[in-house]
Length: 271
Image (cartoon, rainbow, N blue to C red; front, side, top):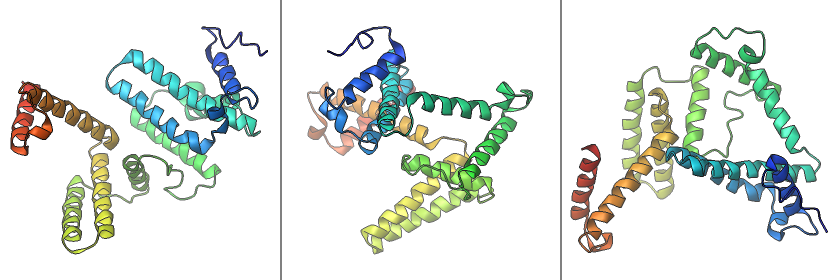
């Protein structure tokens, strides 16, 4: 019979979590679902857990944040366990790699460099160090290393940020706004005269430039869109509540009434 002393220790910390993961993946006595998982099948859960961490922070729910950080940590443990089984690396090596990276990227904290420099200079130094790291991985292109699996809006932002570092950038926000007007016109033309594939392409171009506008305005577009989603959810929930007070649901209403209630919800927030 397996010794589950550590697994049942409520204060076992990370060693306990690693032991639980090993037990779940045990080919003889583990969980069938956990055993059949692969890096590819687990990756979507990893992304989902990262977003749930961000959601808890957005809502300032610190109790839930503890649980969500645990879920995200478990994803790292899961991937590391699968890697260890394949003879590639283990969780300790993951931690060591991260530690080495942080020490190397902070010579002003862990090395001989002075801490007496501006945040802008530290950012430039950070980018220079990362560029050296990319070069060591034979990532010669300016856009190399921007993860394909990032959410599209975030990847657009990062791609444009990389391109701007080598001078491929509009010099003013006004020029970005002009480009948005141009791309919006092309969306209208595609809608009226072209097919669905062309419309999708032109709409993608418009969204790409909107991400660039956010960068020029020093706004993180993913965060801005999350906030807009939260605002929409909150205000539409108020519309539903106002309708419910009349014994109605949205499907019992019409756009004119719901638009009026939306304006009321908006005014209540600003009062």
